[in-house]
Amino acid sequence: MTLSPMIEKQSGRQPLAPVLGLSLLVLALVGWLGRDWLAGPAGPDPASLPVFAARLEPLAISVTESGTIQPREQEVLKSQVEGRTTILFLVPEGEKVEAGRVLVELDASRLQESRVDQEIRVENARSAAIRARENLAVVENQAASDVEKAQTDLAFARMDRDKYDQGELPKELKEAETRIALAQEDLRRAEEKLRWSRILFDEQYLSQTELSADEIAARKAGLDLELAVASRDLLRDFTASRRRAELASGLSQATMALERARRKAAADVIQARAEVKAKEAELAREEEKLARIHDQLDKTLIRAPADGQVVYATSGRQLSFRGNTEPLAEGQEVVERQDLIILPRAGAFSAEVKIHESSLKKIAIGQRVRLTVVALPGAVFTGRVTAIAPLPDPQSLWLSPDLKVYSTSIEIDGDGDGLRTGMSCQAEILVDRIEQALVVPVQAVRRAGGQALVWVRTGGAVRPQPVELGPDNNRFVQIASGLAPGEEVLLAPPAAEGPDTPGPVQERAKGAGRPDRPPPRP
Image 1 (cartoon, one colour):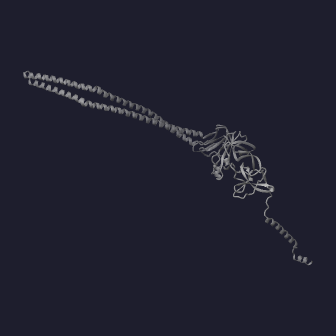
Image 2: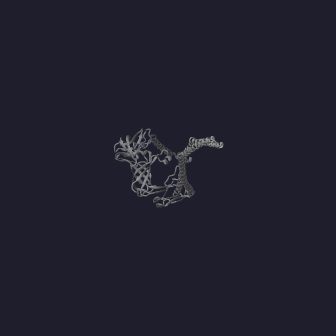
Image 3: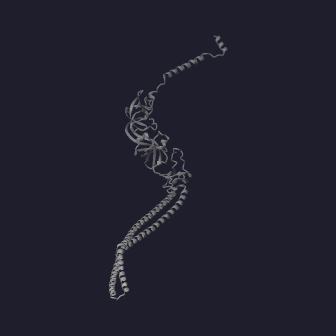
């Protein structure tokens, strides 16, 4: 016994007993932990799981969405100057202004130059219109003169024809007959004288010379008679016919000349009147352009149509799809119809919310709304739905193609005491109300294989129970059948085995919406 301690002291080693004891303790601990690991994790005690007792109570079916307070009535002042122009003066934002005050002054230099040029065009057009009117008077006078002259020529031609038929021709025929009668009488006397001269010549009372003279006189009287008869026949058979034809042609020419004069006069007058109308229309167009320029000059000064507080249109506008919306400022270039100033009118407000497409079928115009405002704790406002956009909001659709929300306007009752433009709000749209409904929280329901399930706790066990769902309000869902009042259901049920994704119920009965926020714990 004395040898061992001596050997240990000489070798410098520690005693083995404490080491062996510690090793046995470690092995025992590992064995105990290995037993628990091999046995697997223990399930939670059903008595310790959070539950909810199904109960009968009124169920208000509603849709709750966030939104923004806006004035119900506001004046949106736009740039009405054509094309692009620059802001020279801009009233400070937030300043309260009275009706008639200049809020924005736009650059008018280009319009002033256009006004001078247009005034010159107006004067030229006015001068052309005056010339056209004077020319019309000259043309009308000349047309009347030409027609009157043609009428006079026609009257003279008709008078010449009548004068010849009724005056000149009968006179010439009578003169011809008179000349014939005189020639016959001269021939008779010359023949009678010749007969006596021959008797006297036979009785030697006349000389041969005197007889020859009487014979020549008788022959001459006969020739004069023949000439007179020939002249009458020529007048009656040829000269009168030709003269009548000439006069008839002159009458016809005068008639056609009158018609031509009338038509030409009418055409000239119509052309002159058309010229007057064209020049006057051109003058009116140039004056209209000048008036539009004056109107544009007036629109370079944008005045307040009513009392209000100035809000820049860019302040309440979100960034565009390209993210290049710049704040409104002096020196900025603006375009026609661009919103510049918003003048909200106090005393009437509305709210604009975005309704998800899954809840859209619940919403209808006229439904009552309960609103709370983040900036006014405890204050509750009421209103009604007044408008629902027919198409999804394009900006939200651009930001997230799978997110389709519809802008909905809510008219707030009363004067909205304490409300201000741009405040955030929560709008609860009241869709329906069930006076007696058996309800459980929406997170207590799971789906498996298309079947809605709740996990009912009875005693110390938990079992799944198929149920039929009714409408919900995103917090509580109605149990139409399969559950009795007072039965306890798990608030955090286990994942169900089936093709459906585990989790709180997402697909509900007709009229159901989507759970936008987790419901409150009971």
